[in-house]
Amino acid sequence: MRKTAKFFSYLFHPITVPFLTTLLYFSISSAYFSAIEISIILGQVLIMTCLLPICIYFLLKSLGLISTSVMVSARKERILPFIINIALLFILKDYIFYNNSAYTIRVYIWGLMNTYLLLLLFTLLKQKSSVHIATLTTSLMFFIHVLIELQQPNIMGVILFIFLIGFVASARLLLRAHTAKEIVQGFFIGILPTVIYSVINYKI
Image (cartoon, rainbow, N blue to C red):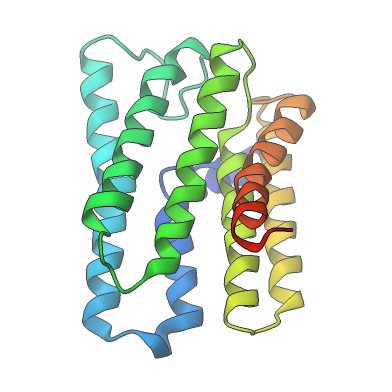
């Protein structure tokens, strides 16, 4: 059971979630984009949110700034990676995706960037939260946003997504990587940016 929990923890690691979410988005909206557009955007997301952070992680570890595994379990050691992730997401959203045809992806990157800002804030307040659950919940909210935007109701897809979040949360608890409080905290951190976006743009 622990091996399965570890597998899902790595598969849905915060640095893989943006790429998987973008892949999910294009699986729903592929009719609106050319194959070249999809390939380029997927490549940009993969480099900026996965490959580059991995390289930076090993650089920080070689410099002795991080001593834990790629999960970065120590609260104090999370601060610098959070700041770097926020910077990379800002560059991706406002420079690489500037005038990009996939505007909705920019909305997701905005939400993810604000999720990391909240995670950073909680970390500075000496509160550890589950980054796995926060990033997955941000993806869930984006998924729901896309379904509404494209008018493609998919209740089963939403239920399966929630089940996935629950499974990953259980895996993190089984591995004793987080407490129940940290899981719940991560869940609400992931929801908040979408709520703010909805209030600003749709005047809810």
